Amino acid sequence: MYLTKEDEKMLSGEYGGLVQEAMRFLVKLGDAYDAERMIDIKYSYAYLFSREWGEGALNVELLEEAVKSGVKVKVPTIYWNYGLEIVSPRAQKEAQVPPDLFKSVKKDAELCRKFGMISVDTCAPFLVDPMKRFPLGTHISSIESGAIVYYNTVWGLRTNREGLSAFLSAITGRYPEFGYHLDENRKGKYLFDVEVELKNNADYSLLGFYIGKIVGDEVPVITGIRKPEIEDLKAITCSMAVGGSVTLAHIVGITPEARTLDMAFSKDKAAEKISVTQKELESIHEELADGKEGEEVDFVELGCPHCTIHEIVKIARLLEGKKIKEDVKLHVQTAPAIAYLAKVNGYADMIENAGGIIMSICPVLNPGIPGPRYCHSHPEYTVGNLASNSTKAIFYGPSNANCKKRFLGTTEQCIKAALTGKWG
Amino acid sequence: MRNERPIILKGKACVVGTAEGEAVVIRDRVSLLGEINLQKGLIIKPGPEYGKCIAGKIFVYYSGKGSSGDTFRYWRLQANGVQPAAIINVKADPIHVQGAIVANIPMVANLERNPLEVIRTGNYVKVEGGTVTIWPKQN
Image (cartoon, rainbow over all chains, first blue to last red; front, side, top):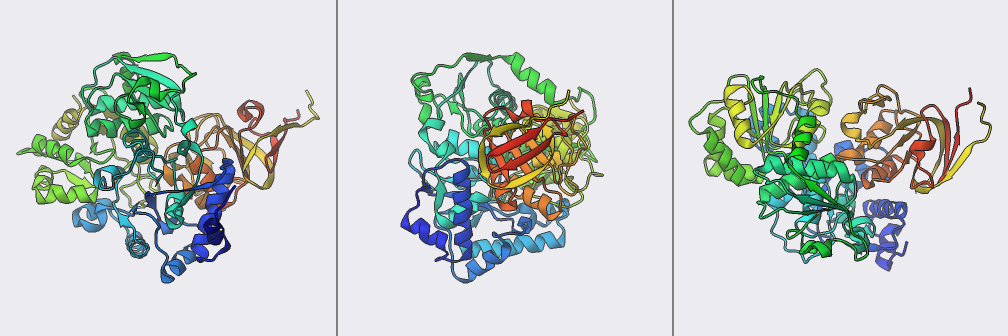
């Protein structure tokens, strides 16, 4: 791989051990994909989670040493540390955050502040930090499978599926040029024509899952979607990364690189059209949700991915003056910054007075939370029968939250289930 | 049928290294989150390999999927002493490549033939850089 003089300096250890190991890691990653050079990134969504770091060349001691010597991130960097459960006593109690985890979160927050990073603690960071305006095609480095698809598809930014690399590229400002950073890998492979009218964001979630399942890790091109709301785009992009491992989709008329159908494909390649009708959405519904009308619901999960403030207002209005059924849990998941808006506007109280709770972690996908309410490490706990408007929540329900029956429907259907304790 | 001749496949070494052992093959994408028990290295993904252990084995699967937190999970398997000896994928998912880099587990992908059609669970397999040698089971 071609390295600049500055890259070589980082690699030689001139800027300390962390920068050196970060660069070594990025070179190895680039070599795995035959990258020819490093490129500058302009933004990063990262995680640190130092409690998860293992032994080896890259280790926790390097972090402390780097902070002491004044190492900073090279680009604006937001990150995921923990969430509302650290700032809200109510959410803290609900999540049963163990003291040692609390301590490590605080330690990471201190480290990250010294690196110059900003915690946003959300699976929908594009809701919280849309302040940076990037030109089309800007290279960034992002974690969070759903957000990665959103950045590529809706904002026209370029990122691969990143992990620890997001932090390491923020520290160096560099990333190996491969995958979705290159024009030739961003062209469409499959064409989906959406004939069915999408009525709510559960439909968008089913559609995304269906597309992901067919394309795997290839690039789908989607026509027939008109005037989607931000909530709809959040639902479809996220679910493509659950049904499959999609990184980029071209939603014709929405994706900046696909203003027209022709722009989405390479000149010499045409794809066979796959029509999406009600039947396809129903087939995914049937595959994921086995609960029947009239059956009991124990846990209702909304906000997968995290709610916008507008979704929270809608939920609060549906709950106004009502009480959810005893023993039923209603989790409304959002970013701490949006929870703050909900709080100061009185919508959080409306939800909580009805018996719901606003959280930012979730029972099905969370950063290694060992609390007994969360099941990765506590297989004896179950959320019971789970209802959601999200295919992601429902898909991961059995493996990650030991859920039993699964119900998938609109926000209204989910709220009704929380109020009555029954589906339908 | 006795098959004395090993099959040799060339591919791309994503993490360069040498390892050998028995293969465990999952003919699908794998998420370490929710599909592998990280304490014991057991496969908890529903399917024919459910309950098998990947510790010290040549772990063969289609590719990674899902959680970007999987970067940490080969490290975790290593900390628990139950990491695979090597990884063979059809396609290399960047998240799993990163996991293999930090835990220093040899990893190969993009082989000239689909490894899921050549390697069976229980076959003896050797990984040396980008070269994979397979000894089909002798009866």
